[in-house]
Image (cartoon, rainbow, N blue to C red; front, side):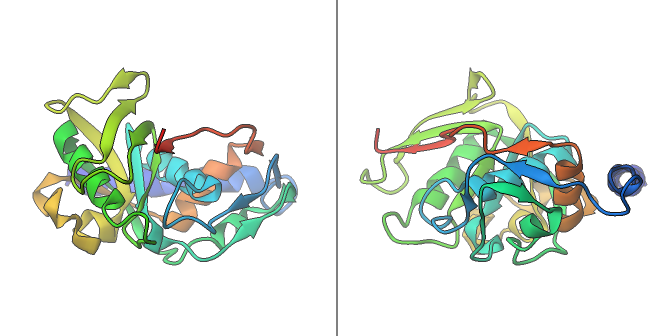
Length: 221
């Protein structure tokens, strides 16, 4: 009952944010894009546009970490300048997937990140875009041992600590062989908020995007 009530509150909160953003002009406010955002290399490296979506997922789940796989994205580019929320939504392949929050140990998070990096240098649908963490990895190292370091916020990832991790529902269900990192028993709650609504709610509170290169995923350095 508690999980359902939380999901209902989350949907209502997202709707209120979007309604406030559209109340004055009748349409969602534009976002200023400071540098070109693209999903072009989303299957092999950090994607500035995918990072925005990962941030939106983490915000919707009120989680410490946000994860989303490359398969969730279309081929999309948003040029520098003024952009509408719909421009960002077009980057989503599965807009109606909901945001799910998992409770995962640091060891499970590392297993997932190793899996996401496992196919490099080849393009991979399982490559993970992230929020709330910074990864340093060597893509030429042996599979399963490519991650050199992981930071959550300002602290190093603790393998034994439990973290809240938000992600799309199919990923939470073990899609793309992420069942090797977690199972449905690790699920804390399904927020009921779709990726589209999570993204619109996030953009409604964000005036500018792409001010600087964040280097969330640093490869081969």
